[in-house]
Image 1 (cartoon, rainbow, N blue to C red):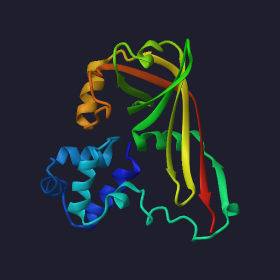
Image 2 (spheres, rainbow, N blue to C red; image 1 turned 120 degrees about the horizontal axis):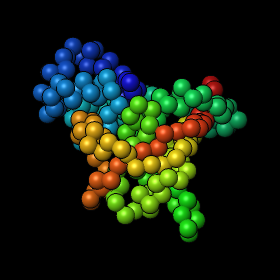
Image 3 (cartoon, rainbow, N blue to C red; image 1 turned 90 degrees about the vertical axis):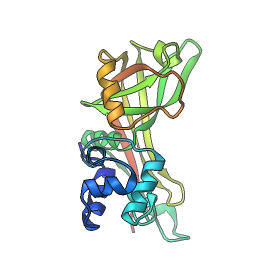
Image 4 (cartoon, rainbow, N blue to C red; image 1 turned 135 degrees about the vertical axis):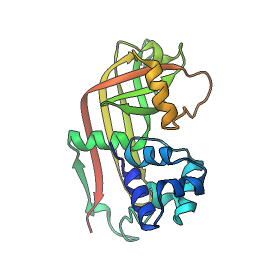
Length: 214
């Protein structure tokens, strides 16, 4: 599955006349990692994005698709009556889930709802993430949970959000997921001993996008 980041990276590399090997040498990576970024769901670190942008003569915002060139928004002073909410279909929701890699996992506890940010991977349509063995999320195994993923541009007053609902379970093949995470250079931002893999297979996907209509 190719992400928006992968497509932008491949397009800029091709336009610069560089092979994957040449780009890897310039940014301190190897060709296999560049291929993973271009062709699969991978979550590079901010430092990696900086090195890639420098090597390609562009900016992190342009490469990540968060800059003004990608999402210019309305002219200054334009009334917000031109913003249109759009309901996303399931295919678009799945595509956007594969773009981000960071979301908020919501579970029910004895004390009420709890929401925790997680770094996640999408593997065969399922959402997988690591947590501690005795955390709120680990203890929520076997219960219904939800993860929300979004991209918000406050300046342009637009964005999108996707909500995936399903039963949260302990992943049956943590070693496989660990290898995939290493290949994708995806590490939990929170750090610490987060070796307990969880998964959520969505049985309901919904999403909305707010778009500017010039």
